[in-house]
Amino acid sequence: MPKRMMLEQGSPLWHAFRKKHLGASNAATIMGYGYKSANWLFEWFLGLKPDEEENHAMRFGKETEAEALKVYNILKGIDFEPEVFESDSHPFLSASMDGVAFLGKGIPVMAVEIKCCQSLMHSRLMEGDYHARHYAQCQHQMFVLDLPRMDLFAYSPTSHRIIQIERDQAYIDAYLEKALAFWSCVQNLESPEQAPVEMEDNSEWGYSADLYKGAKELLRNAEDNEKYYRDRLIELADGRCAKGHGVKLTKIVSRGTIDYPKLCAEMGFDPEPYRKENKTMYRITNDKPSV
Image (cartoon, rainbow, N blue to C red; front, side):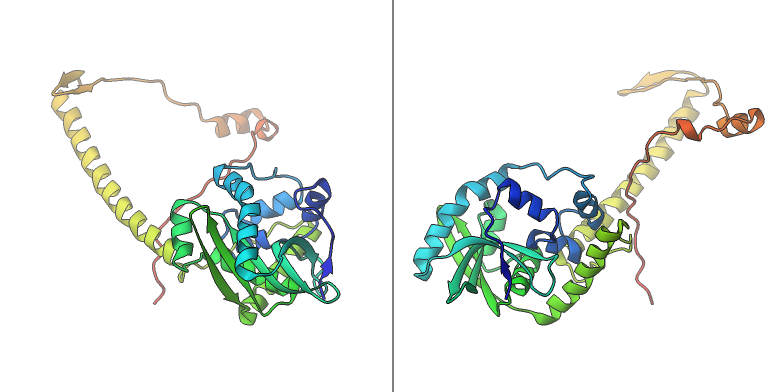
């Protein structure tokens, strides 16, 4: 049976508790489709990253959640209350639940995850189309509480819907393997591996990837045309400055750059102590399918 922590969500003790546990909100990141990367989450646990700044959507969710729970309780005819749990078999896993109903001696038998969303996300939930992030979160919660199913409650002041999520043990097994590997990285202060996350089955990734490739091709053609006509304008100017038809060509002669690596080598000077902090950059390339 999971350990009931008797913590008030949002309190200083709860925040300290979160720093020592992998929570349900982290599950999507562990599975590779969260808003944040595994490396970001790793650095957050080490105190190298601040808590995520609250945005408008997060504020709306917090402000509306209590109202949503009251409506859900009326619909179910049972009193669900917010609770915090720690897994009995995997104590590094926790679940801060929006609502839990108990049986007998504090045994959780039903649970709900409330999503107070706006616009597009709420419309999708109202159609029963929940995101993979929601699924990961619920599977994590069902494992910690040892439940066979739970509800995902989509709520706005004008509409709501209850979506039942069944426990998926195969998914949980795969998740636990990744969660254990990640938590080992945190405990050993070893950054998670940078292996690419497989997105072949992610429809949103596929849609965005197709649009990106199309835009990239259009940009490449535009750049080729731009270079051709730029060279042609320079050729027509015949070494002179020129202007006309909304285009101005200015001839600029600048001094050559200094070969600093060669200079340092010849002077026996080590520039490394003067190097600035590393910068993180991302490169997107076309991934040719394997044959």
